[in-house]
Length: 110
Image (tube, rainbow, N blue to C red):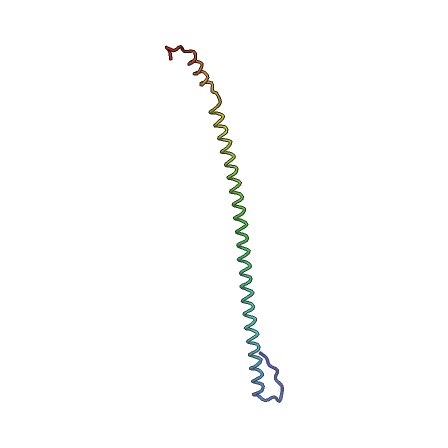
């Protein structure tokens, strides 16, 4: 806000020059403040986008882990089913003994 003061220049002329300089400085300061605000908003927007990308990546990792665990669970269920099926269809000793005894009985004993 310092205007050049020339010796011998009339006071009114100096005041007008200072007023003009003050107005230019105010416009420049206002423009600077607006640009700072815009840049701050852009910075906040970039931070928000970065946060969304980070959360999306975490969600994808969590989903991948969940699918992997579900696949493991499905394989475990399949293995358990196979073991149970084999156990049911495997001839047990007690089944064989009952069949043998049943076959050994005559019609009146049955």
